Image 1 (spheres, rainbow, N blue to C red):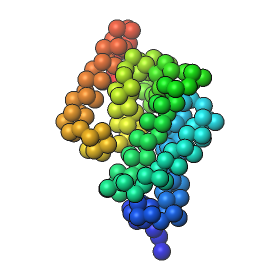
Image 2 (cartoon, one colour):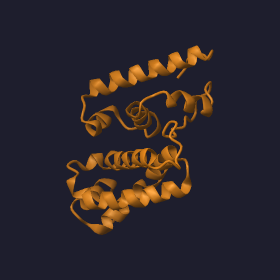
Image 3 (cartoon, rainbow, N blue to C red):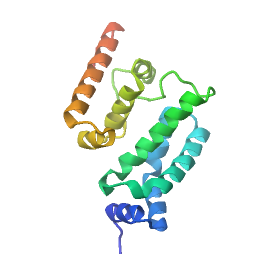
Length: 174
């Protein structure tokens, strides 16, 4: 009998240890990708995954809606990584390490540089929406703000990025 993601989420929240392990396996790649984007080091990303797994295990029972388990886990990872960047000088702290992918007219380095000019909160919104492809309503739930606020903040951030690239002599296509 095939177990669905939803069933795994519900069972994990209810305290089923096997389901929790299956849940972590299900989202392992997303969590590692998030850690790598912030910490830019495989060893540190793996260490972050271990810590986030522990933290999630201790608090999984607090999740109210199984549909938000993935975004909840990603938020824990992002918070952990940001704490590491703030508290540990061996990490580069220039921009939380968010990389762009698939932008035809903007290089990785240019996008990284542009994102460095954003606040941590702005970087997180961009990361959730465009790199993790989290839906607006899920971001709103995760951030505990209205959907309209998420949309307006993303619009403002994208306008800021366009201006940045126009000033650099680019096309401004972000």
